Image 1 (cartoon, rainbow, N blue to C red):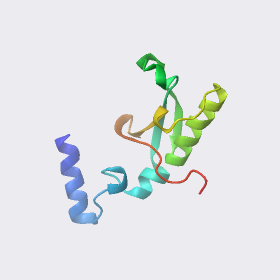
Image 2: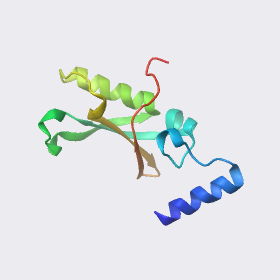
Image 3: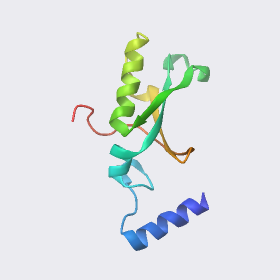
Image 4: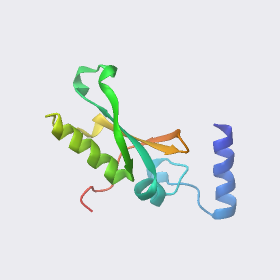
Amino acid sequence: MRVRAFLAAICCLFISSCGCSKYASDFTCSFVEKSADYEVWYWQNLENDNEADNKMIGHATGLKQCESNARIFALATGEEFQDRAYICILMIDGSRMEKHRNLISINE
């Protein structure tokens, strides 16, 4: 975690980009929203509070596609979509970096 903070500080000094405060991210908003690779996780039957129902359902590029994949999964399983039921895990070189949900309109 210290290395990540150090790299973010270097980024701020030399690139004038300190991440995206909207997503509390070390990465730029544009990258997080449009370009990042994500694992898409969905917690089916969220109200049952059984962590075994939380599973990776696929991959996505950008947060809109991540949310869209979660919505499609909910529809395919007969569930009503809930924003809290999915999470997008930003991946860099096979490592899980940050967790996000889409904060921009899916219909844009």
